[in-house]
Image 1: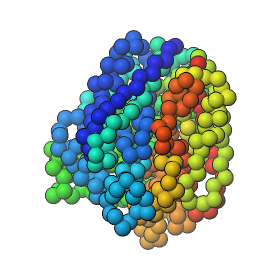
Image 2: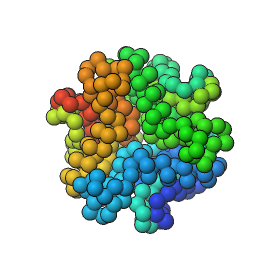
Image 3: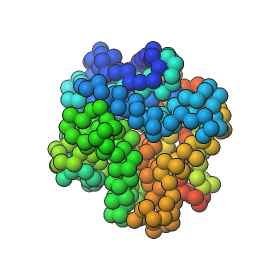
Length: 139
Length: 139
Length: 139
């Protein structure tokens, strides 16, 4: 049984989804593990992880609009606004999605379904550098 | 330390919760692992996993109605409707619940609380065949 | 490769967030594991786990108010109210946050970001005793 760690750094362009499936798959492939478990951890409280459809780009636009409504910017609503009106909604959108994901590895590959991609979900308006830690255990 | 993989296939009857605790427990019991970690991965973007109360069936009815309101069908609202008005709400309800769950195993059993059950949450109106990958590591 | 299990018991004071980062870190430090994976499992369906900012206490107040709106108490709305009007909202708020979290361990420490803390999120009005199982694997 072996383990491996990888730090993935993503430069986001502001709010929206960045597909991180390819670098996650490359890391797994490079370790030569046939069966195992990959865990992704997003090291932020205003960006998160989610699994969504990778085919139709309108899905990602609909997701963005939906979360703008679900946890809206609203200057009078939140006590915490140190970093602006998108600060507290970013924390809430993070809570409603994922900070960690664990994906089994079978035959050397992540068991993603045909339409699944792993996304980093940036919740701040400005571009940010985001760190995701990958942990693999298996053999 | 050993690992085991199992593919669980569930035929859903359309929107709602299917209890998958029993097959998950059977898989764990069959591996002879005393201490370990079970991970469940749902291989879809319009069905998800959740942990909820297993006692009162009205909880599951309330959950269904709540998610119909939280991420509603609304033909004019979403750009993505290739598969009908329940397509995009299914993606959103998936994002708001879980694609992966990891449950410790102690004394050969999942450490579920007295009222906890693990459910597959189908978000499409039509019945679907859904695949969940189980990964166990332990000894 | 080794594993360790710890039962963490938290006495909550009713609705709100309790920081459980310190006891989780102490458990990891005591195991002498350099690289590994810590999984936390909340054994309840009316309390959950979340990762949020640990700096500004107004964040936690905003989170409380937000979830009161997102999954409100509303006596006429839910069929399930055996334990009172906060019963069903507690289940829904649990579903919208996390029951399990898995955090990589690198150089003997959890890879939490600078602003990240792990919280137990109590959703019932009354104080409760809550059990969280910690599972560590690594070496």
